[in-house]
Amino acid sequence: MSAEKVEDKMKNKNEPISKPNNAVGEQNMLAIKLKDKTTPTSKPSTAVNVEYNCTELFEALKYIQSAVECYSCHKPLRSARVCLNGHGVCPTCKNRFNWKCPICKAYITDTKPVMLDQIIKRLPRTCKFFEKGCKSLVLVNDNDHETFCRYRQTECRVPCCHWRGLAGELLQHLETAHTKELVRTYSQSYILMSFNTKVNKEGLLAIIAYNNIFWQHVRVRAGRLVQFYQYVPIEKPKEKFSVMISFHTPETNYSSTIPVHSDAFNFRSLFKDRESFHLPIQIALSFSKFHSGVHYSMEIIKKPL
Image (cartoon, rainbow, N blue to C red):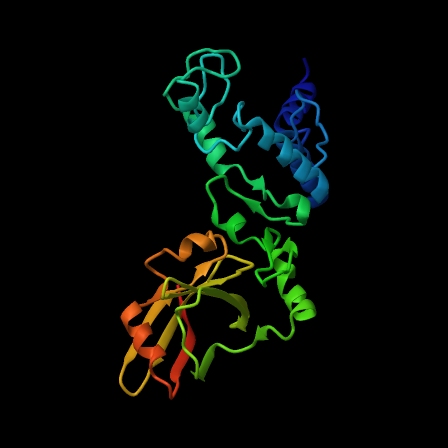
């Protein structure tokens, strides 16, 4: 082999063949390397449709919600208890059927499936007033929303009125049908010229105060005067209410402050509640003998929670 051929081979060996000669070439090589790193060649890319509208999401949630209901009473499971065959049963039905599954009669274990229990507690569900128009999502242990939901059913307490409807529509009903019976103030004060607790009677007053509807209930039974208040919230309360009631004459003064209950409470049971205002019989009798009038005052008090 000649010296010229050996020199040519050495020259070709020392020169890199694939090295780019300019900046553009370097950028192209870098782009190719990055593409090879980030794009997997072993798995084909699949398109995932993530475009859902609200209706589809609610339908999907309702479907999942039905899967975590008690197999017996069909109420949402608040805690996971399953039989040996996997049927979910609520604690009430578990005790009612003596720990036997109402579906397959298998024994209901007291072991809590951790994963299922976590899913139940974290799974949002539609409000039970969804069909009435509520679009809120609530957790299974959140009772506050449905207690105060503006789409819950309520009724007009005005005597002889049979209106029933949504809590959020009650004010419109009162302003339309009972304008004369409405009182728009948080306090009242007047003189009772005739004070008689010997005659049984009941009374109710609708009061608008602090952007809320209040029901004032008054009952006289067996010489005892009882008074309590309720209000109709249309969202979870951010404040609490109380009422200060006072009766007085130049000789006697009696006052008391009572809490205001929401309309979720059974109002008839509140007449017997200790938190209602009760005017002692002896004081009521002394008022009935006072002919120059009894001064009565009421004030609704609002405080933040």
